[in-house]
Amino acid sequence: MTEKTLKILQLYPRDMNIYGDWGNVLSLSRRAHAHGLATEIVDYNPGDIFPEDFDILVGGGGQDSGQTVIQDDLHRIAPVLRSAAESGAPMLVICGLYQLFGNQFTTVGGEVLQGIGLFDAHTVGSEERLIGNIVIESEEFGTVVGYENHSGLTYLGDGVERLGTATKGEGNNLDDDGEGARVHHVIGSYLHGSLLPKNPRISDYLVRHAAERKFGSFEPAKIDDSLADRAREVAASRPR
Ligand code: GLN
Image 1: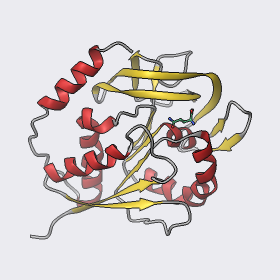
Image 2: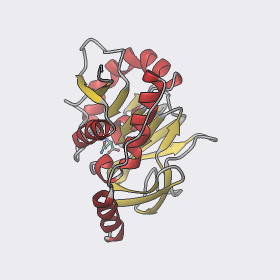
Image 3: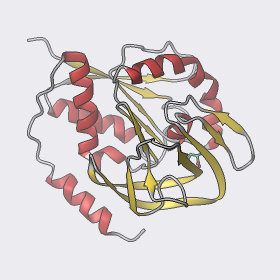
Image 4: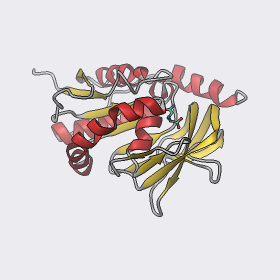
């Protein structure tokens, strides 16, 4: 029997990978294995040949300076990212890359970084940093826990779906309780942590859509998530 393999693309691990974001790729890969799928993990950094045949894309956060480094390259690969997203490729982008998947990020110093517009959203840097544990309630994923640390405040355009509603912590901005954004099968979020080990439903979502898109079907394994459930409970019960 030939093994079914999902290619996981880690976007800009050199410049955009903080607060445990690398753990998302590890966790996602393990989760795919638990569902009986093999994985290949490919790193993509600025200037590399872009692996257009990826099945899941995962990108992390970074300082404003890291975002400046990858900005031009991101625009170079943007047409491929857009068409992959439109054709249903699952993606997870955290914090700094979430911001650049929107229309625009204006840093606190006034520098304007153009985003690739996958999310109709814009981000404005503030003097205040939003730092701490965060808990959100999501229609699709239930309680989701993580850690946020950003100065950018993100505002979604009308009709853009949020990932969830922050019940502890701030999320997208200080003016509403929204956290993250969703379009097609692309998820943007401020939650580091790593996000996926404690929130395996999001991994399952990414694996399921990748498998259905590539192989036409997905047969999930029954996985004992009691440890992750307990970790989420503990995290959700802690002070910010
Ligand atoms: N530089 C961005 C901000 O502070 C992103 C930070 C991050 O990725 N954690 O808003």
